Length: 208
Ligand SMILES: [Mg+2]
Image (tube, rainbow, N blue to C red; front, side, top):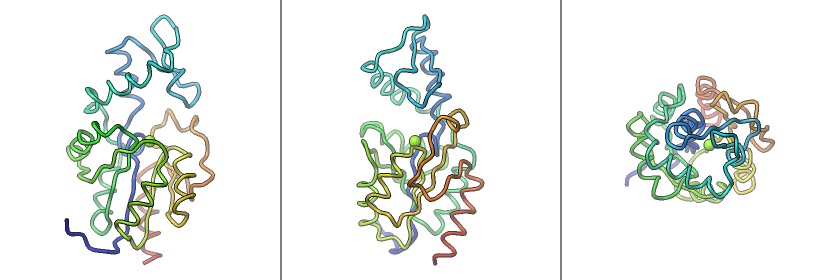
C-alpha cells in the first residue's frame, strides 16, 4: 500500500456517526423478533422488550445484535453529510473507520460503507478505543489526528492513550442526543457533519 506520510488522519466511529443505528435496529427488532426498544435511558440491554412488555434478559442481547449486523446491515442509512464530508477530507487526509463490531462483520461493513460512498479502511474493534487509536497513530505517523465518536468512554480512552488527538463528540442520531451524557474528555461536541466538516477543516488549516 502506498501512502504519503504525514497527512492528517481522521479516525471515525461508524454506528451513530457515519451510519444510523437506532432506527434500523428498532425496525429489525420489531419485524424479526416481535420486540420493541424504548430508550428511556442510554442502554440497549434492559430497554429491549418482548411485545407483552417483558424485558429481554441481558444474555439474549448479543445474539440480537449479531443477527442485526448479519442480515440487516444494509438497512443502516448514512448519517446526513457524513459521506460528503469524509470525501472532502480524504482529498488530503487518511481516513479510517474504527468500529466496535465483531471481526466477521467488519468485512461486510467495509463493503456496506463503500456502497454508500465511504470506501475507507474499517477496523473491527472490541472494547475501549484508545489502544487501537494509538496503534493507528504509530502506523500512519500523521501530521494531526481527529477522532469522532458518539460514546463518551471512547473519548476518555482516547485521551488516556493519545491526549494530543482532537476528539469530537458527535451524537448524530437525534433520539440519542438527550440520552447520551456529555463527554468530559472530548475537545468539542458537534452533532452534525455540516458543522463538523468546517470545524475540522479550520482546525487542520490552523495547524498546518
Ligand atoms: Mg457509535
